Amino acid sequence: MTQKCITGIYIAKISGGPMSGHQSVSLKAGKGIEGDRYFSSSGRSLSSYRGIPDFEVTLVESEVIHTFNKEYGFSFHESAFRRNLITTGVRLNELEGASFKVNGIELFGVRLCEPCASLQRRLAVKILPELNGKGGLRARVLGSGIVSVNDLVTD
Image 1 (cartoon, rainbow, N blue to C red):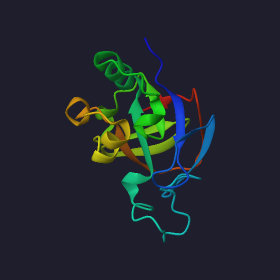
Image 2 (tube, helix red, strand yellow; image 1 turned 135 degrees about the horizontal axis):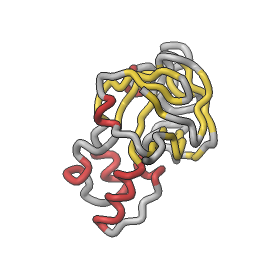
Image 3 (cartoon, helix red, strand yellow; image 1 turned 90 degrees about the vertical axis):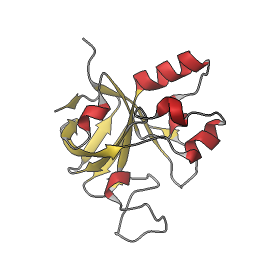
């Protein structure tokens, strides 16, 4: 049985900026990932997305990325999918509308994170149909703490 865990962590400091990998990040309740483009430090922001609950953190299954690359002959790095937390062994679609924890920090799955036209432009391939229903999950951060690579994802 595969362990349910975080296998990658990525943030972008500015909207459209490069995604940088991290071993750990700080999650703040109601704000998101400290240092990420959608983090809301004051409730006011330059980005129209900062502070919107379903932009606090995004997750995607590593298995989806691996299968997509294998089936379509690509070798995109997981950061190219522009999600914050990469999971292994977690069925993210099942967490839509549910609470779950990463390293004991409570999150709430707000809605599926469908692939967008921006992602398609960045990857320069037609991906929308192939990734519908598999693009990941948008989640609210309900607790605060540190999330690290290899942390467990639990109910």
